[in-house]
Every structure is written in C-alpha cells, then in structure tokens.
Amino acid sequence: MNAELQTAGRFVVGTDGSERANKAVDWAAERAQARGIALLVLDVIAEVPLPSRTHALKAMASGPDYLEHYKARAQQRLDKVLAQVREKYPNVEVAGQVVQGNPSYVLAEASRDAFLVVVGARGQGAPMSVKLLGGVSDAVATHSHGPIAVITDEAIENPGGPVVVGVDDSPAAKGAIAFAFETAHARGVPLVAINAWDFGAYDAYNADVWEFSIDEITAGLKKMVEGQLADGKAKYPEVPVEVRVIRGRAEIALVDESATAGLVVVGSRGRGGFAGLLLGSTSKHVLREAHCPVIVTRGEVPTQTTI
Image (cartoon, rainbow, N blue to C red; front, side, top):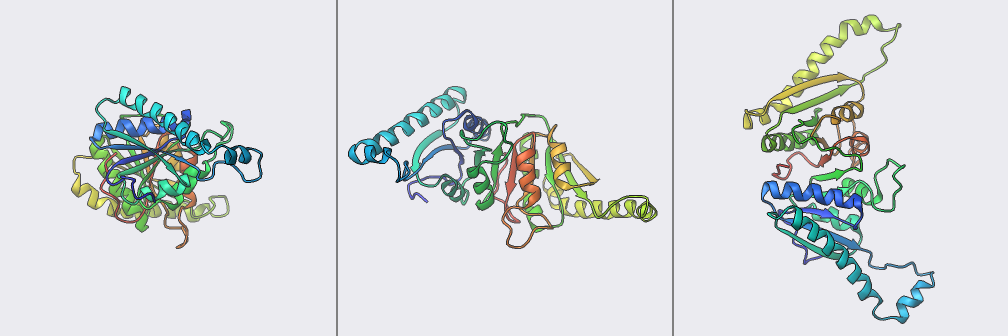
C-alpha cells in the first residue's frame, strides 16, 4: 500500500476515466457530501504500462519522458473527474491521487481503514453485453478488509427505497445487519430483512410432508431472523422493520427485492459458505445481478458507517 495514501475515514473511489467509473464516483461523491465525509478519488495505473514483447517498449526505452507523459495523462484524466465532482458537489471535500500499482490490490488495501470503498462493476474494457463483474471489482469485493460498494451499469437510484439486508444465522450476517440498520437510520427509510430457504423439492411425492412443515419452518426462521435483528431494533427503534421469509434461493430473492430498494447489503459469506471462502455464491450473484447499488460487508462487526 502506498504509504502516502490518506484513506482513513474517507470515502475512497476508483476511477479509470470511463463513464462506468464516473457513475461510481458520482455515487460516492453524493453520499460523501450528504454525510460530511471527505472523498478520495484514486486513478491507479499499472507499474509497467506496456508488455515487454512489443515494439512500443522500444519507444518507451528510447524516450526517457515516456513514463512522465504516461503519468501526466493519468493526472489530466483524474483532474477532469475532480473538476466534475467539485462542480456538481461543491460542499464535498475531495482530493485525488494517481497511484502506480495493481488497482484491485490498492483499493482492497484502502478498505482496511476507509469509511467505504466504492468501485464500478466493470472497467472501460468490458463490453456492455457481458453482465459480469470486472476483474478489479471482483477482486476488490473478494479480498477487501472492510465494506465495499459496487455500482453496476444498470444500478437504479431509489433514494426513498428501503435498505434490504440478507439475513441468516452466520457471523457475516451480523455485520451486514448492523450496517443496514445504521444506513436505514441515516437515510430515514425502512429496513427489509430477507431470509430465503430452499430445503428440497415440493412435488406430488412429498406434498403431504411439506403441507405440515412449511408453516413450522417459516415460523422457526422468522424467529431466528427476529433474534438477529434484536440489537439493531434496540439501537434504532425509529427504523421501521419488515421481515420476509421466502421459500426459494436467497440470491434470487435479494435481486428481486433490489428492483425497488435504495440499497442492498449482504455479508461476504452466508451460513452455507466454506470456512476458507472469501466471497460466497449468494453475494457474487447479487453483486452481478442487482438493480440497485450493493454493499458487501466483511466480518461480524463492521466499520461504523452510514451510507
């Protein structure tokens, strides 16, 4: 990590100058201004900008000013982004820095002490037809040390929409719940807690079993969810809370809810995740498919943030 990078307590957002990155910068700037928190915009450029087996390397080697021009172009790109932020959000304290390194590593390391790290879902090289997380956003979400916000190409802003949080009985869910309550409180919106279960097939061969089990299962899961929400309700009694226990896959339920949500919050790994798994299948699916911005929290106790 660059020792000169001042990320502590700030919103940190990465940019490559693309329209996709600008959407992430805009999202971060709006919330930084609303919260009165400083914003740091990073343009991370490769340490070796050209492959070693190209004729362009000769030009780089023969022209000692090449690297300086390379850095200067990045600074010009960043300056343009900063000017746009200052014009649109005059009350936000914003700074920018060009950093040489691996973008995913720099941003993941920034999450150690940043208020929130924000990335676009994909960089400028990814085609619009491919609905996948880009290499940087995927790596940052996987290897982050604190909360990460991913802003997709299709993300729709619903300022008055509820904060939706995925809830199970995993330690990761506790962090997501605490983060979601704080954010719902700050935004003045309701919180919707989603638990989804899919234990087996419902068909003619076992319909009788399910007839006597579904209500019991649902009641048990609702009780578990209420238990997980208890601390948040006590801390933020003014936040309206709705619990929804849904039969089906969790990732599908959360994506469906994201259509009308202002924000979706998920833990990095759910109850079904393996101990060594850094990012679970549910959170990956939600990051890729959600209709609104998504925040992935890590660990049981999150950074004290309200987005």
